[in-house]
Length: 295
Image 1 (cartoon, one colour):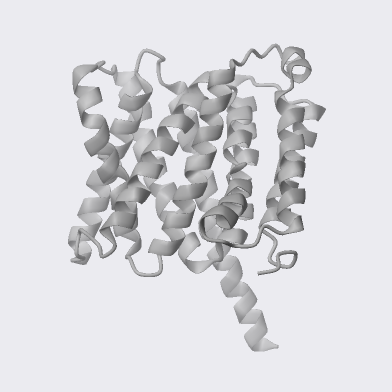
Image 2 (cartoon, one colour; image 1 turned 90 degrees about the vertical axis):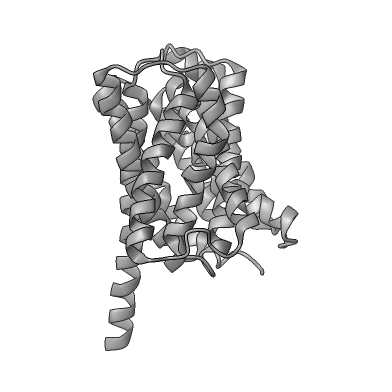
């Protein structure tokens, strides 16, 4: 009984990492939305990556770790997927209500289950099909024209498509992070994300530079700090918990994002949004439930 008690306590402590990750990532979205629209999305991602790369490099040097890691191809892929995801997520945050963009982003656990069946031959069981239908019903409740018009919200199809591309890229990045966590130090995994982002975005930023003002710099620094904190806690959480369990805990960011949307941006949440978000969460739980999956 005593051993079981301590195991439960240890498992709860591990989950705190993912709760903190959701909290810090939600604060990052507030910073993104607060920045003036004249600053391009790719420049925001570049600044975020530059700050994160600087902080992570200092930590790696202090720990005296091999800065290049072992599985370089997979680390580079993780960086590319993370860059694509972040550009899409930032775009969605800037062009959508925060609560809606956050819900769309957190369809990624459902995509994880689907891609697991396609890419690594994991059996697509009945619960994954049920989860997908449930999740998409929730999305339709939130994004249907009647619902959006009742909240005086106009969204173009391209913005919605980019938001979902962010969720898909995130799901693929999660798979690579989980695999890399078996052999790589967490800070090497974290480093490759901003490292690849800085390399790929530098030419675009250089030729299309927009100088931020003091107010923008304040929020840009916030993006870097909160994303670094969120990425650190997320990577630790993924290393210590099954991806399926981690995915459902990370859905807390929807709660945080909705709260910040109400408090800071005067966004409105109605019963349709609550039911739709609950259906997406239910789909996430079903798709990641080990009890229902036949592996």
